[in-house]
Length: 73
Image (cartoon, rainbow, N blue to C red; front, side, top):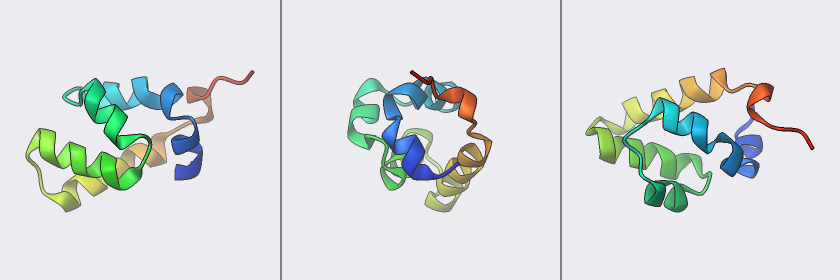
């Protein structure tokens, strides 16, 4: 899954992000707005983990992202 697809469908994948990182708030989601760097930063902040660990979690999540996450109209 490429990140552009995730970013372009941010509202659709928000629920999946929230399943993975439940500590993120609605405000966090607004700030992130689908930007990968911002997401890693918010995860780092909310979970008190190192930046490289946050990046790794995002990369793992991105790899698991699936076409079924996106609704097709």
